[in-house]
Length: 406
Image (cartoon, rainbow, N blue to C red):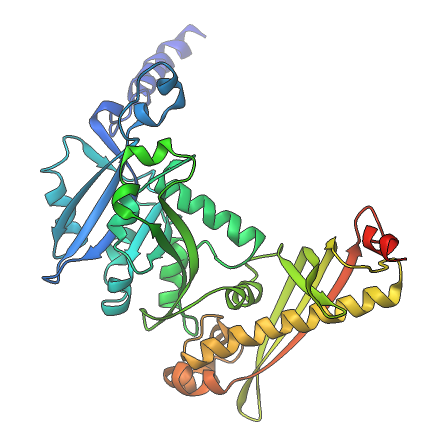
């Protein structure tokens, strides 16, 4: 027993000595945590990258309560270069700490870059650098510079990067008018056979100058707001158009990005008096060749409840419920067709219909792949079926207006 201990003890001690430390450790005081970054294009054609660096002391409510943290919760540095790698070298001259990207939640790309240069070249640096996470969310700065969003201070969250990510999560889950797309999703779509990228947009409302001052955090009604708005359609890596509103919801339903949303209904000549809220939904998309022409079938199943009825109506009557279900089905079907027709008009398959054909018919797909977006996709025949079920009507079958009307 002692002999075994004699041989194994040095090995155990050596192992502990080797694994107890971390060769790549960095002290918190030596790094600058980047929470969001933005890319713009200067007038001379070079790229400008902005880095949103969080100040843990100033963003902490506990510090503010103690009288500290009086400065802005973030600091923004920018640098210009021919590419992202060159910018990262130049920014080191301005920041006294090493930039740390493992907590970067958001990449904002200006609309100008997305339209003129596209995404193919600029995303390579972010994918290649293992500090950036593939789950980093990507958005397009709509009508403004990406730098303006990086510099804006936002109430509640204080950090505009975090605010945008959380807003995308909420709108994707509750309305479907925006979707949360990360770096991996965009790159996968760029490399895909038969699917183009679709990225949510962000818009700056109000004064960008006032939104960058600490005063904006002291007001009950901010003078500058960041709003997630619309989706950017891409073709061959470049932004070609925007969609918004209910058309976005049609896209989200096809892509299975949203399950909970509201539908307003008219009843007996009165507009938007009944509200239907989906509880769960499922979308099945299939594609095939019929007479050597591509055909896509979309079947949507939705279950939900009546969340509001501002009109005399008897929801205990099965015939009334069936009539409401048919009205909802027609409305959603109309949104789906509007989304498909919009993409067809712009000749960009953001739904992945081509990808389905490629997987099922690889040999036939090879013959039409190069002409898919411009020739075949705009002419693809689509069949949309929607089945809606009202599972709940709330705590009352009859609106109080029914009783007042009687």
